[in-house]
Length: 303
Image (tube, rainbow, N blue to C red):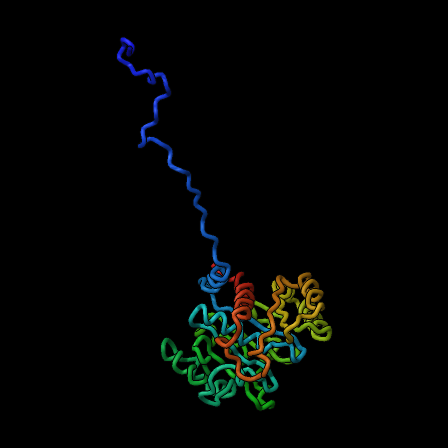
């Protein structure tokens, strides 16, 4: 017989939690990991407070100075979209003008200097239009090229005052100026570019003679009072063959003690012929390596 209080026999059991009050299964949310490639690209997209000069240097020939200059300009330009130029300031027949940019004309730094006063006095869009008559452009439009002069006698006209005027002109029209320097540390144009540089990029390949020459150059710059430029430099080690040699690790370790950073860029068959450098033709891994290299160079200037 039911209890007299009207309760049911199972009323002494714990009350059931209403369905609406039951605790929902916990769900853990994890923030998406940032894309490393996008992080590097973001460094290159940052506003630059003032135009920057990147000098690519090593008195030894055949150490990929021209390749590094072109691919840095191409990488930064492909991310920023505009405002990047590569200048061949080699005093003796540099090849940058042959390996980069469309040969829409044969004008070089010699022709620009001949008209320098007229171009310097231009302003606004007129300045861009006038300077453009002396520039070549990458096939994808990512950067401009100021080709060097093939006549070796012209080097005598690249005195310090003229080089400074050209750099100042390029600063008025471009945000990033990548300069391919020559092999003569005693030449006035080489010294003037290094004195004006915001970032020194030491290029080398995994060879003892190339590394020794780079080391000697850094000592020379230290003695010339450019210790800060040396300490903040970036060393770029390029692999000329598909299989990196053990020496590259030794050189990387050494130059980390002398410069701010060391970046190793891989071999790419698209660069082997020594002909025109086409950034879009590079392997994805090569593009990532150059993106990292360019970001390391530009990181101190990014806001």
